[in-house]
Amino acid sequence: MTVKNLGIIGGGQLGSLLATAAKKLNINTTVFCDDIDAPAQNFCDYFIHGKYDDKQKIQEFIQKVDVITFEFENIPFETLNEMNKFKPVLPKPSINRLIQHRLAEKDFVNKLNIRTTRYVSIEKKDDLETLGDFLPGILKTTTMGYDGKGQYPIKDIKDVNSMNIDFSKEYILEKLVKLKKEISVIVTRFGINNFEVYEPIENTHQDQILKNSLIPAEINKKILDQSTEWATRIAEELKYVGTLCVEFFIDRNENLYVNEIAPRVHNSGHLTINAYNISQFENHVRAVCSMEKIPLKKLHNAKMENLIGNQITPYRQNIKLNENQFFFDYLKKEIKDKRKMGHITTII
Ligand code: ADP
Ligand code: MG
Picture 1 (cartoon, helix red, strand yellow):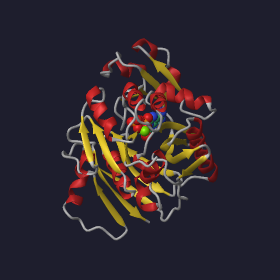
Picture 2 (cartoon, helix red, strand yellow):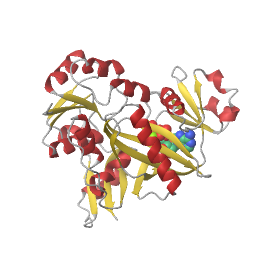
Picture 3 (cartoon, protein in one colour):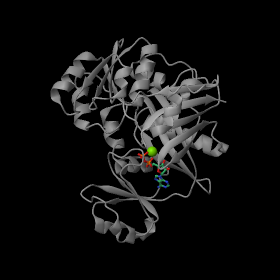
């Protein structure tokens, strides 16, 4: 099937960059988003604004597109499942349901004999009382978290009383890893044992938000091989189609842990636009639209800096960039604290 119109659920920067990649391949895009100000409407061909459970809008979207994908994981499973009855949703809705729940996600990874952080399910406040062994830890909502939202670092049980935590939600308590480094591995899978994998990317966070990404990551060969093997095995086990990212922790004893899986393109892979012959976005579009896989070639080393909140302002005012620098403005309407507004990739 030749895909003429690709449907993308979610209209943030990842949706924008997917739409841009599709354009390059002569594929039109329709973005469906619940935010009337979604920045991706500046980059896509058609835009549908509506809530993700609006049956009429879902039908309108289905009519317009040939294949459906998404740029974020927190989409109601029922919505994806409904859409999948009419047009293929890739990656599969069941994958999304698994990964959007931190507990199910970690159970799945452990079943593959792949190491994660230690964790325990927390259903009520009392569950925390006896869990000294998991402290210091981070309490995270099992669903809907991103950029550190819905996360509470806990050093001591006594801290919990003074924190305003809504225990009507489900949580997971994770033991804090003494981090040496964080890396991510991005894989695009086209079919059975048919994938391309990008080299590990080294990531640094500020306030639990990604700030800088770098290739090559400064890691030893064992970590490089293990992270690559784990990421590709996860993609294979999921029978994944499209681009997926696995976030890893490396502790001070050089142990590798899976932190989380993103069933989508990932912020740390923005540098693939300038560093590779085919970006993570183009590869995602190629895979979900059943297009040809082109051998992946790294062209440059690179680093990427996220521009968060006001950090975008000087760049919008025509700062002179060097020849090896590439500025991306997500064209978000409003500058907000902690909001990712754009990024700069530097070829090194
Ligand atoms: P999000 O869905 O918001 O990306 P993550 O679980 O990836 O949530 O957490 C965001 C960041 O917080 C991580 O990249 C890491 O820097 C820090 N973090 C989260 N969990 C742990 C942990 N168990 N040990 C150490 N650092 C952690
Ligand atoms: Mg994360």
